[in-house]
Length: 411
Image 1 (tube, rainbow, N blue to C red):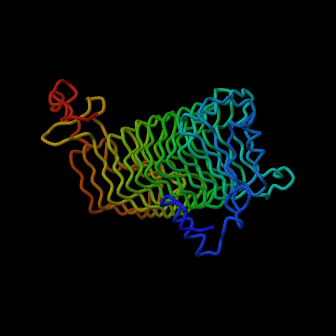
Image 2: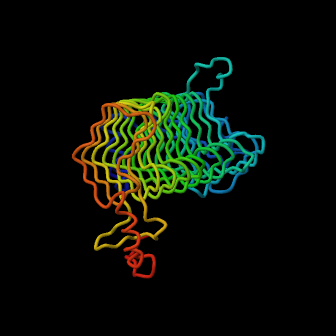
Image 3: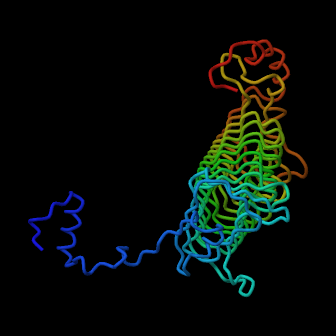
């Protein structure tokens, strides 16, 4: 063959040059033209069921791609091998769980888990799909004994159990860029997981947003939580964790709870807004820091440190009402009040460098048994306690939601 007689496009010339430099000619290529070592993508559209497509994966794993469409799921879709990516076409791929016996839409676990409870899968990812259920269905997605589990760009809604439940997903689970809404239990339920990243997700109107129990090293950052029917973030028997940079608003219960021997946890730079029952409740927490949070119009119990908690640092926080300057408040008179800190029989607590403005009844309240070794210093208190009644009477006519103009975008 005379190469001078060939006319090739630029891409073809580049490929030919690579082949010549690497001593490869056409006779050395596989007959199929496939890249050596590659595993073909399993296109679920060519199979009678999604489970059949999953079962077509080789033991080494691979990719199953779901087309757009609504697919009813009567029994759990089973992912039982590792190194698997199950991906859809965004929310146009809708897995609708029609099971009414409490089963999940997707179950990810080792195929031999019943015979070997210590069996583990490695590296399973779900991406770009929507999973919904019904009041009698189970969890949306259930993962058991899966290391390096990755959830990205998944919407999980209206399930009868948790949106996503992960049990013993010990090594490096990552839950990112996903949406959890209207699930009857928690949006995300983490049991005995380790080195957990939960980032850039949105949670709305689940019972609880996130529960982390018997775990280690939760890193929950940059999430938005709104309108939960009970609590926002519940962490129990977990240590070495950070909950930071989250927006938590209007939970019917408490925004953040630490309970059952939590220790070494930082709650920082969160905005905790318009909670009617409680902001942060340290029920059983030790060696923890509450810092640089903004508690805005948290009507009761903005921060409670209970008798089973000790060695707590509280610094750089802002406890405030909806004052916007020039003697005006943003919210209606029924939203005027904000609250401060309550100490209940705790010990070894440092409260410094905080601002308390417009809180009632006190910036710092002491209840129950006496608290011991408490430092309360270098804080700013303004417009608190006894001044609130006079303030309420004087501000009613100035309230921006009682007839005066409101600024753009404000509540």
